[in-house]
Length: 426
Image 1 (tube, rainbow, N blue to C red):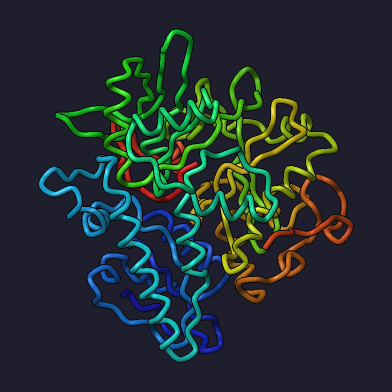
Image 2 (image 1 turned 180 degrees about the vertical axis):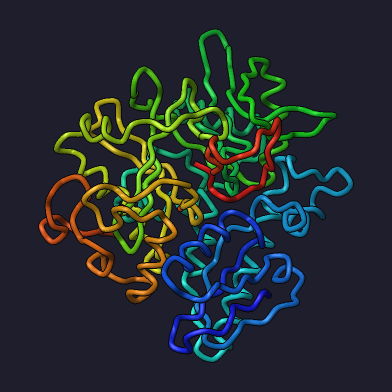
């Protein structure tokens, strides 16, 4: 662990559990320095996974993504992939999840044992956000609107034949098939059944030497045997299957939203647009116009923000979450697709005008929340308290109820991307 320099003994002592040198860590450290605080210490994920670490007494520990680091990825799922390991491999997410959640639980125990130390997020909640099936059930049980999902109460989907039979029985002809523990659209298939037995799948998955790899090029498969082979390889890691909801549009492109909720309030929003079903920016999606969203939503803008806040409120021990919101075609109704524990990597994006984090990036806003009281604090504890874009004070609107990417401007060009990045790239 890199120690923070000794300065004001009364200043908060911050530690980041992350990958040293990664921009997530460096962006948060920049926010800490800008606030006049000591440089945060960095606890490497590799040390945690190898078991050689200690928690400093009195530290406030921020948990960040273990993604985009090949050595860490190899520790988490390398054994499951064996000699065929490559960071772009899509399989092995169940092993990744098991290792990640076990390590998180161990960190939680170590923090509790360190005098005065405090963890700034709940490991159990992070574990739920990294299981799309559990997240969906939690949100639905809390009354948060979500896309209908394939019932797996009788057991997980076993393979393509099982999936095809269940979809036919449920009358579902257009669905998204997602690895339960994946992120950044790795392994996701937009699946459509047409007339006369035709089937197609749109995905970033590519075959290479008999293995599944993630790439930056979205492609379509129209041969059932190819689609079946992909699903058969992904199913053992666990699948979440939900109805394909037609997206709203902006300037002729499909659009959805990433809303960052900090301390219970929607603070940042990015519009993601695409010509295809995948809107992730690293897969060719582009940032849209937030102003046009406000205009299209009109009086329903508050509903949009409230939907994201209600989803985040299902994770009260998590001071920040990236909520993927799917607007209906009329911009009047909103569903929650996913909740991302590490959905705050939005370089250069500042808070919504008129909102509690106006002028602050996602890291500065989270730091302001920590300094105001840490996890679970009220929106009023952030600078400003109004509902973004409405001109109304937060107290005049219902609060949260209830109770989880490289920007093309900052990511280096690549032809393939790590499949288990687990950084919730928008």
